Length: 350
Ligand code: NAX
Image (cartoon, rainbow, N blue to C red; front, side):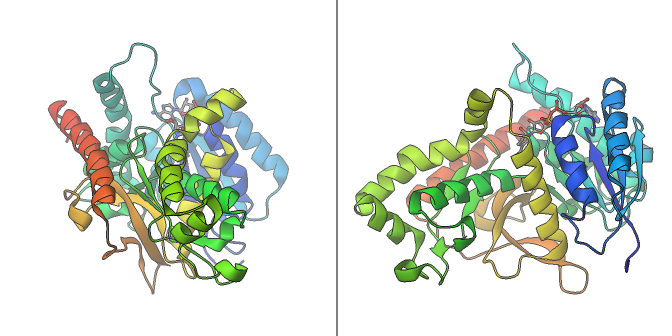
């Protein structure tokens, strides 16, 4: 084994997504077959037994890449030396809870965790927030870790939305998911998100459609431009944005394996790079790209040259044209993000 072990911290390690994540990470599916990992699972006291049980199962897998597993309810222990932190554990919305209460409860989790990351994590740590409301939780964690950790090392997960969008297109066009490039999720990981296919193309391997814009292929498949636009507005966008609710309705439980898969895709692409694809989607701290206010954690088209010699993780792909309709959808989602930020500010968290 070539490299030093990488410490990966998962919060909510006793929960569902944590459980679906850790075995794949330990098997080398996130960082590759030559990077050994140390796993640290952070839980609250009520979740400790479940996390400890998962740790026993990890041991029983005898993964060659897994150096050790620690389970703790102490954030400073959990984040000590972490190169990668996956913040999954969050306070769910319960009946009768107002949005302000939800933001406040989560600020009470992501503020202290951000502080702990700033205090003890590796100096090159990368943090992805999965726990909802993910964008604003990432904003809070990033602000709390600064200035020890630069805010641009924090991101939030919209890769599940991205993958859902690709899956819908692949099904409709009857092509493989790997044949679709250039899809973007803009905005918040919420119902206001904007799944955008206006720059998406089909790979050259797709016969007569090879290299064709997805919009043209949709028009071809659905009977014209108007039909394609109607499908995008009335079926595709709402279905992607509300897919989480559809999964709950059909499966009787929220998205777990697909969420863990997306979190693995997100970290792998940031760490190892996104060659061969135009971009993917992730919510990162805005530097003002596309008119999004600076400091907001917003989903953009992003690419990465990996972390190390060639790159510093995710960077926003700039210069894409957005028509009036797309600009309107992005503005609506950004408005929601700004409102969440302002609500958190009112709580005195930022
Ligand atoms: P579970 O309820 O199964 O697990 C959450 C775990 O977090 C529990 O074991 C709980 O004890 C633990 N936890 C709570 N507070 C904690 C704290 N302060 N420190 C450490 N651990 C803590 O939920 P699960 O299905 O795993 O979902 C986790 C989060 O992912 C939820 O917030 C959910 O809304 C969010 N999701 C985000 C998605 C995204 O695309 N960004 C998609 C999937 C998912 O809905």
